[in-house]
Image (cartoon, rainbow, N blue to C red; front, side, top):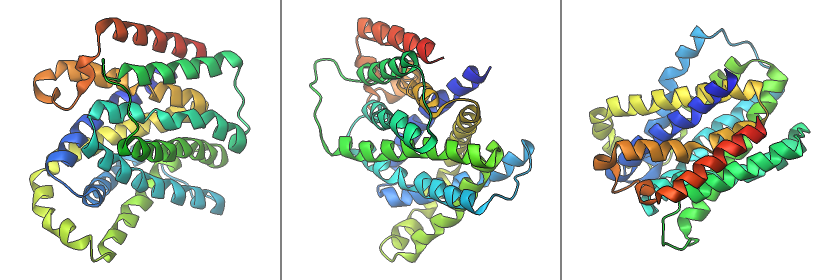
Length: 293
């Protein structure tokens, strides 16, 4: 059951990325404005966590961890939204995988977490297959600005996974690990209004936000479910195993893009990946997941 829950996270994130690419590219031109309204909308789902249990008072150490987690929740969005403007959604999704290669290292250094050789091999197979899955056929890989942006974004998320596991180990409650970072990030986002350069654009797009508020709520509810399932699975699994499962997001993105081809094919180029290549990657991902599990 825990693995089923864990795989719901990349599924929800894949859906969220597709919708966010529309808003980021077509409505909100400045990444900071998109970050503001996304984080603001995300905060409204914090009370839903009360259905899973009441948060407890964390220790001072946990408060510091939750503050860093909240900052990362906002910070990783900025390079992500810039990258969406520079390359295809599918490539951006695959580049999320890059930072995950650091998870086993950070997990070992920070948490002293050690897996078997078979699990590390499985992790490497999943990461490699996920990257290959979303490369365009006949196009050489080019290191451009989007690569560096997504390297930063994915590295922040990789660090977040390990830090969240540390919080779960220290605080021993996954509700706290969801509740406090979301609450803090919802408050921190108002710091954006302190910058004169950002205020006019945020105010100017308020009408666009109202117009697309249902879409924002849909995105953040799906993202909320993705983070919820991810944190709960992380409370039971190693960060390395959890990261490998999250790395299957391009697989789900591919499946969704195929279903929505008439709508999103101009952005999501997964449909251009040859079927033999898809089949090989699917088999590799399954093998990798079996190894780590």
